[in-house]
Image (cartoon, rainbow, N blue to C red; front, side, top):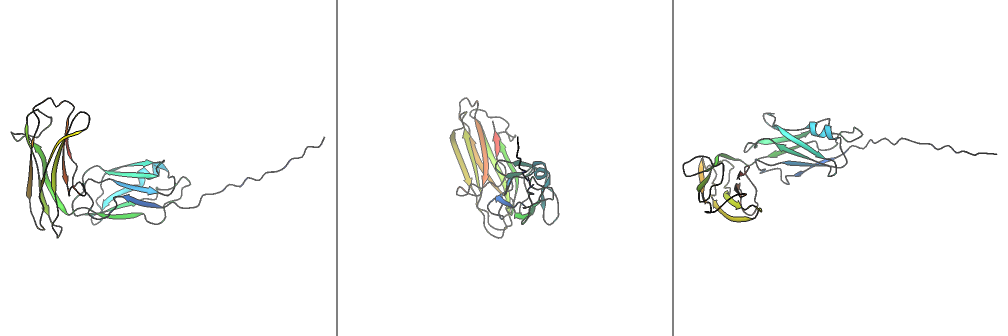
Length: 231
């Protein structure tokens, strides 16, 4: 009995191709909102721990780092960078990929590894929601009269639009009432105060949410700072 065998050669194919990365959010690197998140898209599947440990955000001129959470989604091949506090106005920041940001074969990112963004050159303070006594609102009370306000200064070199907006949403998340107060800020404006009166309906507000926004305009809906949410 003759048994014939054949030898099969197995060759290990080594991955030496470096991944690429692209900052896809925000679309513009200038006039970035102070409360924005950043999304980086990779060309291939990356090593999760390396990505989440290796992406940093820091002020370009001072190198002051900004605390962030970084979340990598292997299915989408994206990393979301969420600053833990609002960025400062009119400041340039660098989003950088460290050496630990690599693919599953250990290849680091090639090409662009640092993106420089610049935030809106508008300074905000006193963004608040007060009741009739001047106390901060912590819960919704039927029939209450509230006032939202924000103080802003503009050193951008040109006039900028601002609009203070509120929306009252019912327990099903449907917008029931809304209002706004627009206040253009000329260049050089210092500590301009925009106020918005809010009258809550005289009925049970269980499950309702009140949201107060500070936007660039209704056209862009770009938020300058994180909204106030009550309820």
